[in-house]
Structure formats: C-alpha cells, structure tokens
Length: 489
Image 1: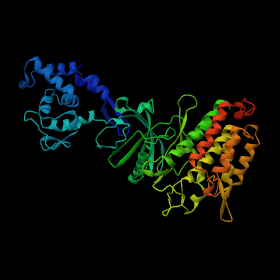
Image 2: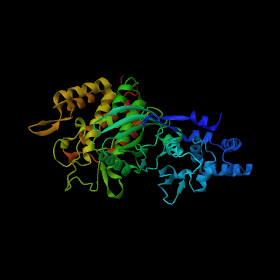
Image 3: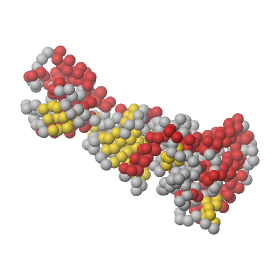
Image 4: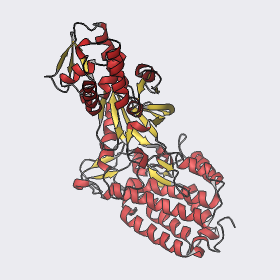
C-alpha cells in the first residue's frame, strides 16, 4: 500500500466542525524516513520528474530535509501525485511552519512572511493549485496547551475534538463535553488524565472577554487548588471558546445525589470538612491574592458552580464559572463606584444583591455560608433533607427561588426556615456542643449568613477557623462524631 492510500485510511473526525484531519501522531507514524525515500524512489521509477532523476544520494538528502521541516508539505504533495515537488517548495524557503499557504493568482504565498512566494510550475496541472490549498488543512489541526495563549484559528481549519456532546445551553453560551485527540494537546493530562474537557462556546464576544480576563487574572494564584482553571482558549470565525477540564463527578448537586448512599463515616465527614476549607481557601485566594493589589469576588457562588473532580478517595471540589466575577482595584467595603454586576443566581444571593447597594467581597461569604449549611445538612440528614429544605424555602419566597432571607417591613432578615434548619441540626448529637459540626454551624450562623455585611467574616479568618476545626477533627474522632462511630448511629 502506497503512502497516498495509507493517508486515506488515517483520517480522524472533527466532531465539532464535521471536518476530517490527519492527527500529528498519524503523520509522524506514516511520514517516516523510510516511507519518504520509498515514495520518492517509486515516483522516480515511474519516470516522473526527469529533472530529479539523480542518484540515491539525492533522495536521501531530500528525505532528510523533509524530515527536518517539511513533513506536512510532503504529505500535501503526495495528494497531488507530486512527491518530488516538495523539493521546489523547500528550495523556495517554505517549511511546515509557513502553512497554511494562500493562493495568490498562480502562486502560493505565506501570510507569516510576505517575501516568500512559490510560482506554480507550468508543467503542473493548474487545478492542482486549488487541491494543494484545500488538502494542506488536513495536517493543520491545532495543538492546544496550558500556556494561556489565546489562538485565532482559520474557519477552514479542522479541530482535534474526537467526540462532542452538548450538555448545557443558555442564551449566552453552550457547554459541550468533548474529547481532545492525545497528540493535539500539551499538558492537559495533568488536569484531565483521560483528556475529557468541557468546551464552552460563547455567543457574545463581550461575555467571552470578561470570563477570559477573569480567568487570566486568577491563573497564577498560589492557593488555587480548589479553583477550576482554564486549559486553553481559541477563536474560530465569529465564535470564542474556552477549554476546561471535564468534571466527571458533575457539580455539588450531583455529589449530594450520587454520593448519598455513602456511609456517613468519619472519612466522609472529614472529606466534607476538608472540601469546605478548600472552598474557603479558594475564596481567600480570589479576595486577597490578586496581583497588583487587585481583588476579586466570584459573585455567583452556588452548588451548580462547584464542580466535582473524581480523583483518589472521594475526589475534590473546585469553584467554577467566573463569567460574572468582578475584579476591582479597591478592596474596601465602601467605595465610590459601587460594584453592581448582575445576573447572579437569586437563591444564594446576599440581601444586598436585591438592591443597588454596593456588593463587596463579603457578598461571597453569604453565598458560601448557604452552601455550607446545605452541605452540613447533607452529611447529617442526607439528600432528602436538602431537597425538603429547598422546598420549604421556595414556599416562603417570591417566584420559584429558594432564598435564605425574606423581607419584613421592607427590611431583609434571615428566613425563619433557615433558623429552623440550624435548630434541627443542633438537636443531633453529632452537631451538638463541642463537636466539629457544632462548631461549623456556629461559624455559618454567626459569621457567614448575616444580613449586615460588616458582620460577615473575612475569608482569611474563615479559613483559620475552619482549619482549627479540621485539625482537631482529624486528631479526635469523638469530636468529629461524638461517639466515634457513624453520623447515622
């Protein structure tokens, strides 16, 4: 089987754009020193290109040039049945790095280098010029990496996504579950070993730019273990995309549903406390570790924006979705230009989100407190209790949103049902006085779910207090579970 036939059997499918391409790994496997020299020898044997009828030494020398910088050029020439034609292209100083080449009259030119030009030989069929321009794209699927550089990709270019399934769509974006071809990525395996990714397509450029800028700013935070980082981003045509690691455990709502059958063991309880501390540390990183004195608040913390990555043990939770995060220079509670980013999820919004009042970083503390309360309820009472808690809140608040506060004489107060949830949990031995979850409830009720912004705890102090609880819980199972057995006993 000649090289042309082998290339024809090596196609991969671009499932996003419905195009074909030949992966880098296939090209490297098929276009080798041996196959290049054999293809040149066979063309010579067939009497093609008397100009190049020279000794074997010429074939060897050209093969070396092809292997050094012209594999893609050579493979494209094979499609034209002109394998020796690669010599003319290389002699014109073209290399694989110059692709794609553009048709300019009866010539090929390079956008990267305006002084390079290849005039189509008169003895080559002119229609093959169009074939060259078309076939070169088979070898140009991009390589994605974690360098942070945004790529602009030609609309004609295939993309190396071997599977693409839409999993979520809104008016502003679409999220696909996709698989990246192994030879078209660098560094992805560290974050997503199976190369599954979440491909987020933005319908509006301004939405992409805002999320891209936010993610770029948090990229180098020191305490970012519990923050979902982007892998890469690109633009093709009028669409922008960000590539994230795929969270194979879903979001926190999925965790509560799918892990509900797990024994309420000391290991699960410790994992819950560890993840809550990790989420608080993510918040501290956003609030306090931005470079150049900038600070960030997330602005839309909710269980649906906390993703579960299945690693060893029970996995790890990470904060995600920074589309409406607000990065600002002043970290003070009172500032002259109030931060009023909208589009948050009402159920977990702080009371000031319902007005024109300034939203500070402590807006996130309220939201995280609400999540922690539900998390504790899940550990102590299982998921039916979380769902019931959601239902009773919905019954008391406007619309279909399960707020954690209500208005009394036009002033916000913590919802009565939320106060009942605290009382119910404290009635359990495992959440009573001098227990890990009892102390956690103290932090949530007294320092996080507070209507007055100034009464909410700073993220750094929150981490310190949670760390003390966790440290004692690790050393003292009785403190963790009172009788040291299971939380259900």
